Length: 197
Image (tube, rainbow, N blue to C red; front, top):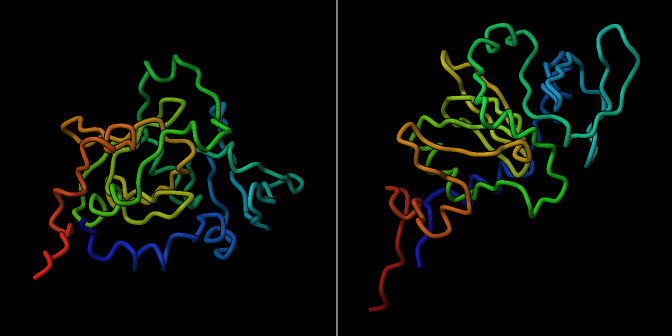
């Protein structure tokens, strides 16, 4: 048996960090892209397990279920990010809804994400409604994955909104594929246990 060098330390520090806590601590408005192709600009006032209280500019406070959020970014970056988000029409035409049951979601293992992040692999994240975000993973937690798009622009994708993840060569990194192919074992970070003397 082997392990990925640095993974456990990374998870101990980052795994429970939610982008909604980061957004709340900033006190600044964030642009949130929701299912149904709705986007809102809001300040996060309170972060709870399943939902957040937000202050939408010019409106009342609102309770927002996290499952409705696909991705978000600081509002001042939104105009620069918008042209970088493409749409896969084939996936869009499936009209997929948010997946409520965690067991039925399209899952990426942490040990798959970690070497991809460290090796700065360019990835294409396809979301349930067809949006495609291309970039390099800069951070991830139990709840979300932050990707730097072209020009280093950061977007945070909620893990529950992911439909597919591939590299430029089309290699799939979802758990369903990686359970068999185990690409993390091919990483330079993968260390096999020394045999007993």
